[in-house]
Each structure stands twice: as C-alpha cells, then as structure tokens.
Amino acid sequence: MQMNVSDYLIFDEERGVYIENPEQAVRDDVEKHYWLNVLKAVIKDWRLYLMLVPMILVFLFWRYLPMYELLGCFKVDDPVKSVANQYFCGFSNFRTLFAGADEKSLYFWRAFRNTFLLSFYGLCFGFPMPIIIALFFNEVRSNIMRSILQVVTYLPKFMSTVVMTSLVMMLVKQGSTFSNPGIVSQLMMKLGLITEEVAQKGLLNDPSFFRAIYQISGIWETAGYDSIVFFAAIIAISPTSYEAAQIDGAGKMAQMKYVVLPSILSTIVIMLITRIGSLLSIGYEKVLLLYNVNTYMTADVVSTFANRYGMGSSGLIGISTAAEMLNNVIGMLLVIGANSIARKASNVSLY
Figure 1: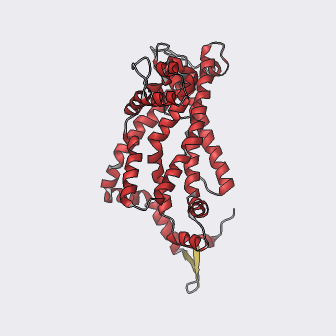
Figure 2: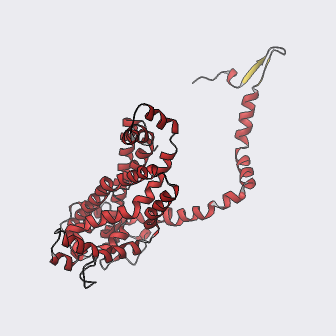
C-alpha cells in the first residue's frame, strides 16, 4: 500500500511547509515509552502484582513444566534415562493403543468408551439439575428458607472426594467390606429392584450399578454448587420483565419459559460449552476410590487406565502418557466444535 505524506505530516498554510502531525507525535511517544509506562504502572500497583506471584508459580509448576513430560508418549520407555535422553519412537505408542494385538488396546478402548459414557450421562442428567435448582431457589420467597436450602445443597461440594466416596460406600455397603447391606441397598431390596444376593454382594461390586451410583452421587455433590452461576444470572433479570409477563396473563411456568430461560440462555450456552470441553476429562479420583476389579468393565476410564499402566507394576509410562494426551486432544477438539456450533446457532460463544 502506498503511503502519503499526509499520513504523518500536516500542511501549515501560514508558513507553507509540512509539520509533524500532533496526533502522530503522541502515538509515537506512547509507542516509544510503552515499556517504561508499563514499568511505572507495575511499580505503582506493586501490591496487586505481588498477589499474582503464587498463581503464576502454581501454573508454572503444575501446568506448564509437566508439559515437557508429554514427550514421553513419543519415546521408548526407559526407567533409567530421563525423557530427554530416551529414544524417539514416533507414534509407536499410539499405534499400540489404537490397533495393538495385545490386551492394552482392548482395555484402552474399553476405558475410552466408559469415559465417554460416564461423561455423556453426566451431561444429560447432571447439567440440567443446577438450572432446575436455580429456578427452584428463585421461587422461594422466604430469604431464611432459601439460605438454609442453599447451604444444604452447597455443603456436599466442600467435602473431600475421600469423604464423599466413603459416604457412598456406607450407603450401599460393599459386601467385601461391611457385613450388612446399606440403607440404600435395603430400600432397593424392599422395593424389589434388586435381589438379596446382589445386596449382600454389594452394589459397588456389580458392574451394572456403577454408572448409576457414579451419576447420582455426582449430582448430589455438585448440582447445588453449580447452581450458583445460574441463580446469579436469574436474580439479575429486571423485575419489569416479570411484571410485563404478569400483565399478559403469564403464570409461573410461562414466566420461566418465556422470561427466565431466554434471559439466562447465554449463561447456559457458555456453561454447556465448558462442560462439553471436559467431556473426556472425567475426574479419576472418584472412580479410583469407587471401582475395583469386579467393575472394570463399566468403571475403568482413561485416567485410571493410564494410572494403572504408568504408575503400577507395568511401568509403561509411554503408553499411559499417549492415552492421556489423546484424551486431552479430543477434549480440545470438542471445545472448538461446540463453540463453533453455538456461535452459528445462537450467536453466543465462549470465544
């Protein structure tokens, strides 16, 4: 593109010469002293920037430095040598997972299927629950009662995973650990949903019940806490919208359908995109504490597969790293795809 003199200079009619454009001079001065101004801003608000140091260190040591170990999925396992000194093997570990002739490929695809199913069921049944709870909180008129209900529903989130899984085990009582069935097992047995043999054996020892127990306990643990975002979006709705709907004869259900839900649609879409992004990044701590050899068929996920092969007696760090990397790459593609679909369908997107 051809540049003109007028882009940088202006003509002074009194003197008949070109002089420097004052606006351009200001821009040049700002650009010239940019880093000096940044330094002055940091010195002025040094206390705020000092508070960023712990967060930066956390991200550095637990997010960025571990990325170097991802090279292990392209290297030959050698426990004696570091990752940098191991031999490069290309995509050999990925080929072993995809189409290997041994049990590792079979168990990987089983774990991948279980990961997807557990996350998909959580998306179908777990994602709408916080929205429903937030709508329920919005209809409770007593502030005291609402506060009590919110504390009760938020409390499970603040329990550790170990405590939560221990409570689940006590409610169902595994046969190998406890002598009698738990209260949930007894109730299901009286309702005819399970036999006495299954109750004595333990629901967590039966592969057919693991996914249901995992999803129900997950809803119990996170639904109340996750409703905070949606409840905050609901209380931000203008009261005039409700008044206009009431004048038009809309009842409570109609107000939810035509006022509340459209108003929080953008929040729902953004939360849905983030939830889809973590579709294959299921938290393995809970699965690791609940599953056992009897339930590998439906409970084993990619993270527990990688933990068992990488940290167990096998010591196949390259295989486990390749499994986790593949899992994360698919999760990234899901985020990009869900964001693109949401942007085209509703003009609301995460980025």
